[in-house]
Image (cartoon, rainbow, N blue to C red):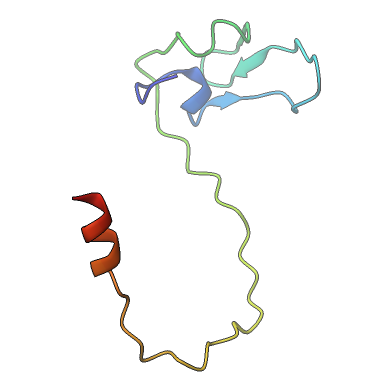
Length: 83
């Protein structure tokens, strides 16, 4: 699936709960109609609005900082190997 708009990426589309072998249809809340899962990647309408991204939750635990934080990355070995 490319980056073009479709029902799967629309804020108005309610996708079914993911389950193995699930053939449940999505539901367009704007038009109030069911959308077959095989067609949801190809369909869109003028009511399409982007769905906010589903980002993973972030653990706010303290991060261990390495002792040698002032070291510079050595990229010269990579550049020599690539040429």
